[in-house]
Image 1 (cartoon, rainbow, N blue to C red):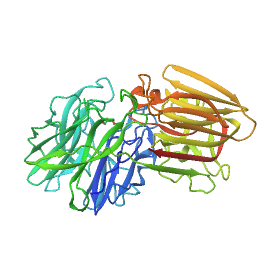
Image 2: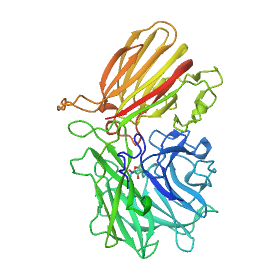
Image 3: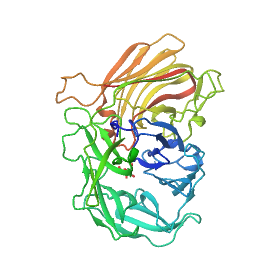
Image 4: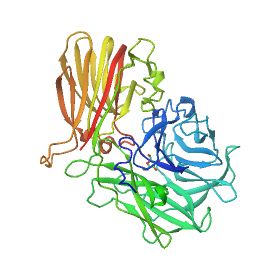
Length: 498
Ligand code: 6LW
């Protein structure tokens, strides 16, 4: 097998689920409050990946207009059955609940989905027994409401996918080895055994993968003697939080592969991960009917990356990598209102708003430059890097002033520079700390906020990392409007892995 890149899908790509169909691999990850939801990636060799679309392109598929940041689309499971792709997901903070979407073509269109009633939890898995009966296996974690935070282990129900209902009361399957938060179950058959693969320990530094097996899809399940079979917990590794895995057969009959969640940490204490939870992969060998994951590939990605948008044509927003918050990108930004430019209308509060006027892209490279050429003469707006409405960085043009803002929960600081009237080029750069600067104060990357070539401030990126933000997502960087009308003639993203 060719060396697997590490990460497999860089940037905000948590909770991966994977399936192999007719020699092609597909991976979907979770998206929380963002739209479109559930990006779908395709690869023929697990090395080169292309985003072929998103499962949820229409807001009504998700119902997350009011979902708080960090709620919305949680961990999905992607499967292929009876000639159709099936994607099951529990949408927290949405009236839609547990939904199964299907599509013939994974690139879309996906249907509106059917809600499965009778399931209270997160991280649903969908599997069929040998007679074609469908089962949903899920984590009995309560994510919202008065009982939020309580846990009922891994549960399972037989379901009718056409009627959209559970056919029995939930049965408890397993609670893992005693680490907190048994979740992310996947059930599959291999040879004579049925396996129940789960995550436990929580999605932070205690994250681990454990497995059990039994004689039927319904169990009873018995844990592996060597659980947890994978964890970075307590190990001197830059890649931490490894867990939440799905299993696929390797290319060309090679070893199986676990597709899993992890973070890339920086700094002396490996404490901060600027890009949030990413997707990784590792090979698996089997012994005595139990999987033995091999060490995660440590060879990082290398190379240069560039994508630019000049908004000249009507298709610039069709790229599946644009993200907006609680609304679709095309509901936030227009390509027709000002021909040749992207137009956004201000939402008061700018990036502090619950639903800002913002479209952006995942930051996927630790060394990165985002640029936007903005005309804010009809209002105020600019370029921003977002974790959520409380944790973000921005450059906002208003008249002949550009204000840089660093927002960190209850703290906020501003810096200003005067610019000539007209268009201004705004830039957010992230750079790795210089080698040898590995001191106690070394947090994460260095972030520079630049307007018209002037660097207003350089900041330690530890404060815009998933640990500090206590965030399930990652950095998303793009353009926003805080007032009036703002237009953008050019947006560029340059990345480098070294
Ligand atoms: C997800 C859970 C988890 O539902 O984090 O890492 C939660 N694992 O399985 C949100 O992504």
